[in-house]
Image (cartoon, rainbow, N blue to C red):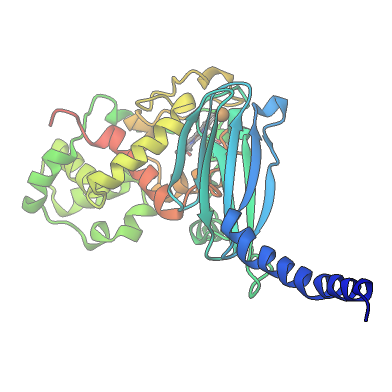
Length: 334
Ligand code: HEC
Ligand SMILES: [Cu+2]
């Protein structure tokens, strides 16, 4: 064997053995070590200029990805839900914020802007589809609460069909309920069992509860009964839950419904139908919690009330309903 042939054999060995091994090492050891995660760059511009780009992506369950959001035109705020608790805060134009996360289970998540960036702000959303090998077809998302309302024949758009005119309980107009005072009087009252049942309360409105209380306590004063109802309607909400619902409300709802629920946010006169005033006790006294819940999750029908069912968990939605209640039922000075 001459020197040439030896060299040729060595190089052949190099190609056949060293290269695959090298490739293997690179692919499975070096590359994951250098960047074990897939990086997805996402441009964030106002919806009329394109919104998120890309606005949909697929990841595998168990895969770790880094999402990098680049704000280009104006300040945007980035959050991802439901139930992930991710809020990156505001990103000024020209800046980037990132989050690295691993989705454990298949499902659909939504990233969305939660800072008022344009009149079309609430359309600024994108979808992350997490694929699970064991469950490649995502189950249709049904909300049992909405299904139940449908079965019951309750129309969650009734106020809209009334030409924006909604039922109000006028006798509540000058009353300021206080859940705090209610906590003190409740022990002196006979409370019918329905009122102690969370499911009953969610599917009935405060005036119905008031009527039952009155039957059981015909000698009690109206103001005591109102306060007792206020207490019952707000008792199951911890202050922590209320505080996070308040922050969700400020970021996602106040622009239309107003910071204190007066339907006087900066966008209030630009929606197809006037937003609801949650600070109007006489109105809220006749609304069911499950109807409020359903509207938040499903959104309006051409009214510009966005749907939040893909952004928030059911628990977060109930917390929002309780927060809306607290605007009229919890007085700031008891
Ligand atoms: C872009 C404006 C806008 C934003 C943002 C918005 N809403 Fe609305 N909302 C409306 C309008 C308009 C209506 C009335 C029409 C309707 O019910 O579809 C409404 C109706 C509702 C109702 C129905 C009340 C009832 O008595 O039936 C609820 C509950 C509600 N909004 C909650 C929220 C919550 C909670 C948020 C934030 C997570 C929010 N909205 C964000 C515009 C908005
Ligand atoms: Cu925005």
